[in-house]
Image 1 (cartoon, rainbow, N blue to C red):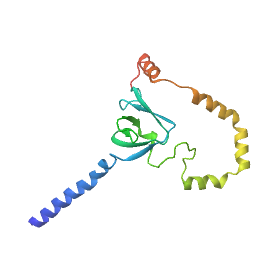
Image 2 (spheres, rainbow, N blue to C red):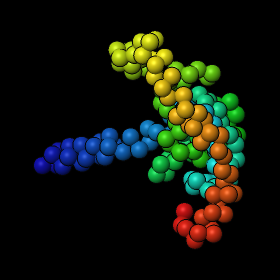
Image 3 (tube, rainbow, N blue to C red):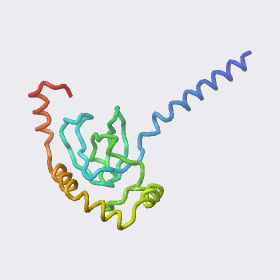
Image 4 (tube, rainbow, N blue to C red):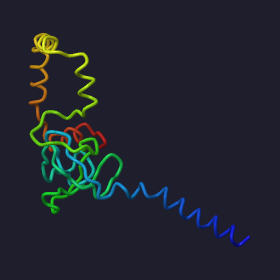
Length: 157
């Protein structure tokens, strides 16, 4: 009877350890910035002060996660720390100055339906739309303007 209790207690402790290990697995995980410019914030809020700007494919280490935010430090300088949305990060190793972010499978699927003629026709028909997209991308709103807008409108963060 004592052996059975000891076995079940040991099994229970092992099971709890096994289940909790994913909670710790994300700490010190290596990830890469997956957006052109990522603002490193002083806290895990969109309206927080920007401490630093990271570039595409920059290698970072996860120190902590809260909700949809990660507290990270850069590999190039471990003194550079801050909060960044998890959506701005990728586990996949990215190459700086590269425009290709697709993996082999995605490239193979894309290649099945496109050829040079179809691609040329697509861009010919969508030039006006792409110009409008360029205009929207040029529009920048500072964190201070966002905070002011939220305060004036009495909106919650």
